[in-house]
Image (cartoon, rainbow, N blue to C red; front, side):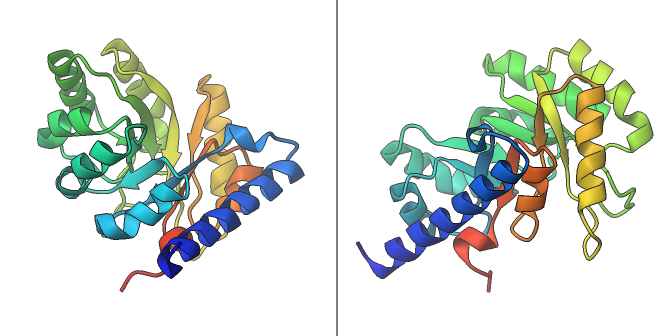
Length: 224
């Protein structure tokens, strides 16, 4: 095992231990939490050691970047699950449906329509999360809180397989209240999956009900 492989395995073990610790505190089964390694900006040779250590769920922000990296990796590891965790333009919907297994950033009716069309054309139906603008931040993507019931109705009517909600809470503010709110919204709308929590707060997210955590720097190290 190279030093790079050893570092990747150690970081993965540490994050998994953190998830297990948080789940235990919350009286949850850690097996109910999916760890998504957010590999955006990292090349294939940086990703491979995590794959070799057993990680299989990965998140990307950009369709084009993922299309460059992942077909080659999938040729060598046939059980990879790819998650689109960044904003999605409607004109990239078909590419996203073709490439990803999960789409975490459904946030507007026009994107719902584009995804529904793409899923029909490709006969492929990635599981979807509705992204909620949980902190009401104008610079961020996500459905406004007041519009969530209508967007859910639109997505379900269009046949999208909506399994949960996703959020990115405001930076530099305690995340727990925003995580608690997203978990409540998921319960209110009978959605089983909750995508929340990143490197700095994934344990808090797990304690408050996250089923999917999106961890980048704790696994890959700080970006240049």
